[in-house]
Image (cartoon, rainbow, N blue to C red; front, side, top):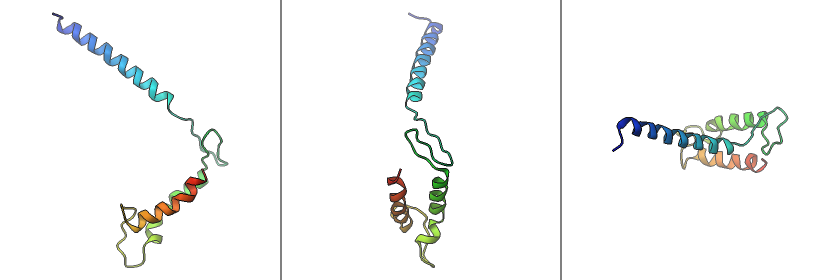
Length: 96
């Protein structure tokens, strides 16, 4: 029967091998994404101005999607805010 030290060493080696394999697989699947003022062309087109505009509009959506006196639920599931956000995001995301 193996002694406890031998088992601990084997477990440590197997764990190290599994972690090394997982890290190398994860690193290979990360795409190169860069944002610039003009937008880049490395597989993805990101514009800082477009990201700022979309984020600002989604943040202000609580004020534009609901009428005065209505309970403002933000973008909660099934709310007016969610439908407004979905309708708004269709055009920016189809242009990417």
